[in-house]
Length: 147
Image (cartoon, rainbow, N blue to C red; front, top):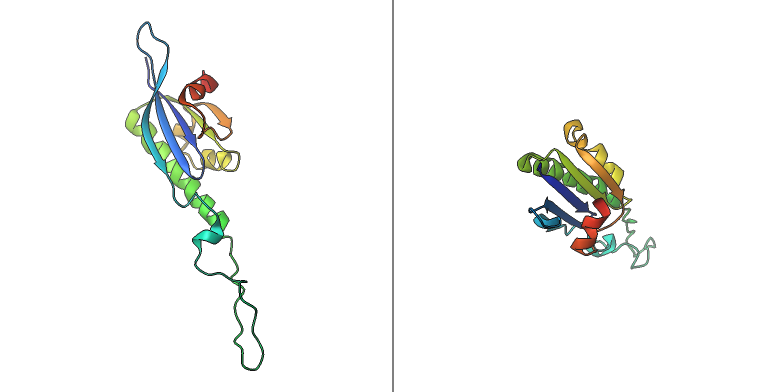
């Protein structure tokens, strides 16, 4: 039987499972890679040390004018960087496991971006793509979504 992998991801979590099938047993999942991205968790305001807007704007004779602390698309750039990292991790995993067919579930916000960042030969092996966040569901339920 050829190897098959299920990958579950969102901006904060990455889980990869190998589908295992022993003779006379039903299929099961074995966790082969898992990590949590600190950048993907929490609010942007909690991560930045500049607290623009908490103090009044100066500008009078004895006061100093303060910058507005614009975010300059930090959230978008972080999202792009994380989705590229996820795509690279998928490519490395598919290569190291030498599997021809694999499955993906990623939240709506990043699903298409992950697919766009994959090499064509890796993308060709994608059997089923679920747009949804399955990172918090039970392992047995994950398998049922793909089989």
